[in-house]
Image (cartoon, rainbow, N blue to C red):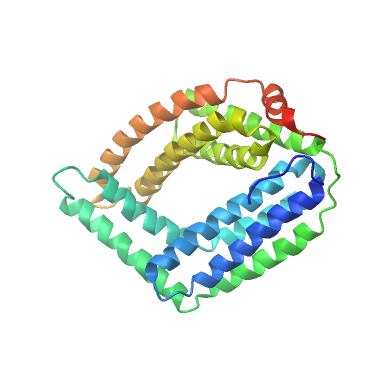
Length: 288
């Protein structure tokens, strides 16, 4: 379970969570050889999620890791990146479908969608046939597990409090930057910090499950909204300058405008506290 237990040994509990995530990530790599394309696509998506979880755990205890954080983070980041192009192709096809008007896809939108479906299908077939990217990712994950096994964490909540404070501060700063000028790059930075904070609250939710329930719901909703915005930005970047890309860009920008209004409104509610106060509120039920 991706959740820490207040009162347990912190080093042992962090190790327990990491082992579970590593085991699942390795299982997802195995599943990429499935003869069922749907299973392969699901495995890619879930593997990338496990990598985000691993990086989030490391960020939470980063104050205790020092330079070891950077090495671990790079290993897991590079493992996830093996499948980013494949995932982007699937996302672009799905995003085109979501933009389709009631009358259906126009010839230009259909052309973009079909091209992305072909790219995604080719990537899936390659993985089924033992693409070298799977082997590279497996080696990187194994190296990351060895690195994590070498962490010498104190049985003290202080580094977690610092890590959580930093996580919230980064989210608050990126929210303010996006509010001032909601560019694709600023929204993407806000997305990353919000996802990270969501993982941290998920890890710490057992400190006071009832009190944190609303925050968990809000962070999930915000993550979905900013995720939609990012998918639209990926589509725009992928088709900008192409002969058939103008309509897709216009529709995507209109959708982004609506999504961003909702996201910024929700962000104001989530990021309205001082970082120290937020961390203190989250950790109030921690027994150490």
